[in-house]
Length: 357
Ligand code: PEP
Ligand code: MN
Image 1 (tube, rainbow, N blue to C red):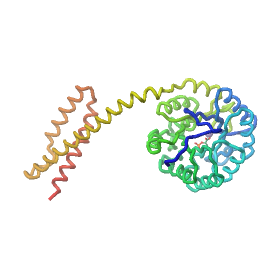
Image 2 (image 1 turned 90 degrees about the vertical axis):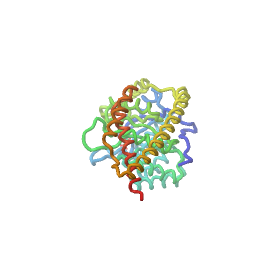
Image 3 (image 1 turned 90 degrees about the horizontal axis):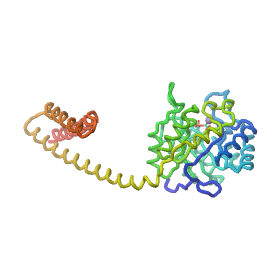
Image 4 (image 1 turned 120 degrees about the vertical axis):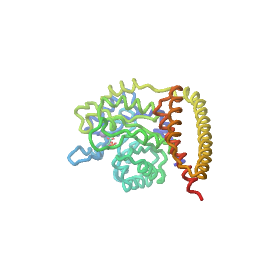
C-alpha cells in the first residue's frame, strides 16, 4: 500500500491528534443534535454516529437506518462539523455517500468478513469515492485479516485509509470489554508506517472510567488519534451506555491528556537509537565469534569422543556470568535467560558438527 494518501476533510489535512466523537447510535433527531452541539461547543470537529448498528443478538437496538442520515445532514448544517458513520453493505455506502457523509468507518464484525469488505470496496470504487475510510480491527486478533480488509479497499482505489484499534474479543470476564492486545496495532504500524491508526478507548474499555487511561496509553504509544463515544445523556443511551461520556466529560478527558513533544524528543532519540543500533551490531558480532569458537570446541570434542554437554563447565559459566551481571546492575534472572539461550544455540551448533561426516 505504497500510495496511501493522508486523510483530509474539506480539502484540509487532518492534524494529529485526530479526534472523532459522537454517540454510539443516532437515536432521535433531538439526541443527535443536542450531542453534536455539545461536542461542537467543546471544540470537536468530526462527529460520529451509528445509523446501522450490528448487534450480536437480535432484539438489541439495530439503529434508526436511513432516517438518521437526514439528522447527520442537519448536524453538518447547524454546527459545521464533519460527519461520519459506519457502513456494512453496498446499500449503506450508497445511502451515506448520497447524504454527503464525510467519512466512513467499517465495523469490527464487517472487517472480519472478506465478502462484505469486497462489496464495500466495489461500491466505493464504483462511486469514485475519495473520502477517508477507517477500518476497525476485526473482532478476532488476526492482523492479516485486518490488513486484508484494508488491502481490498486499497486495491479498489481507495487511498485515504486509516485503521481503528477497538480491541479484540476474548472468552470470559476481563477488565476490558475488548482486550487491547497492543502488540497487534504496534505490528500494524511497523508493517504499514504511513497508515494512520486511531484508538477507540470506548469499545476497548467498555466503561466510562477506562476512557481516560486508555486514551493516554494510546497517545503515549504515538497513535494518531482517538474515536470516543459521547452522548448528551449517557445513562439513557439506547446502545453502549456504560461506555459513553457527556461532551463536557469528554472535554475534561481531552484536556487532561498529556501529549509528548515529539519534535524535540525525536532528535535526541535519533542519536541514542544510533548508539543502540551500533551496540546491537557489536553484540551480534560477538555472538557470532562465540559461536565460531563453540564450533571449534565441538570439533575437538568430536575428535576426542567427548560428549557435547559438559555440565560442570556450564554451571561454572552460569555462576560466574550471573554474578558479574548482578555486579553491573542487571538482574540475575535476565542473565540466566540470556545464557541459557546462548548455550542452547552453542549446543545446537556443536551437534551440527557431530552430525557432519
Ligand atoms: C461502534 O463504533 O459503535 C461499533 C459498533 O463498534 P465495533 O464495530 O468496534 O463493535
Ligand atoms: Mn458503540
